Structures are given as structure tokens and as C-alpha cells.
Length: 93
Image 1: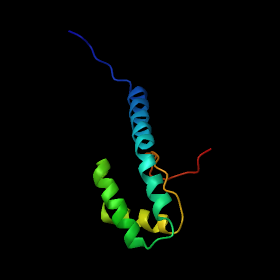
Image 2 (image 1 turned 135 degrees about the vertical axis):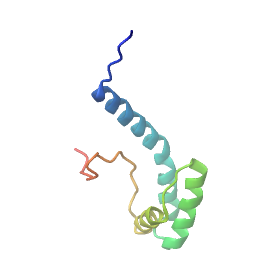
Image 3 (image 1 turned 45 degrees about the vertical axis):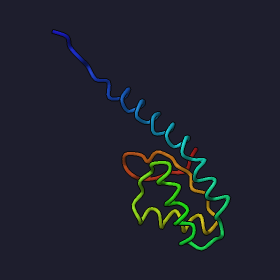
Image 4 (image 1 turned 135 degrees about the horizontal axis):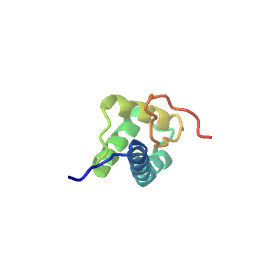
């Protein structure tokens, strides 16, 4: 009988790398919206984000869309990155 051992650290590393690749692939979409919509009304930004998310198969809820739209409207750039397990975002080193 074969024995299978699971290396939790290895699984965690592979999962993190997959999320980082996904974020890197989707970041240009958010950068385009930022370039074209910063300073515009939140509802206009939200509509553009919603369309872009549908095209990219990103499924944020309405609250997240609203938050991103407000940030872009205020001139802030959305940066996609993995969230730590504890859910607390920290500045990049």
C-alpha cells in the first residue's frame, strides 16, 4: 500500500504563488481603469469596474466594487495582492 504525505508548507507556497500569478495577470485591468477613470464620479468608476470585472471573470460583491470605485475616484491605485490568513493587510517591505 502506498503512503501519501502532504507537505502543508509546500501546498501553502504553491497556493500563494498561484494567487500572486492571478493578481499579476489581473492588475493591468485595474491600472487601465485607474488611468481612464481617476477623478471621475464614483458611480461612473463603479460601472467601468463592473464591466471590466465581468470581462476578467472577477466576482467582487457590490460593497467591494463600491470601495474600489471610491478609491479610484479619489485617485488611488488599486493593487491586487494576497491577503494573509489573519486578514490583516500590512505594508509591503
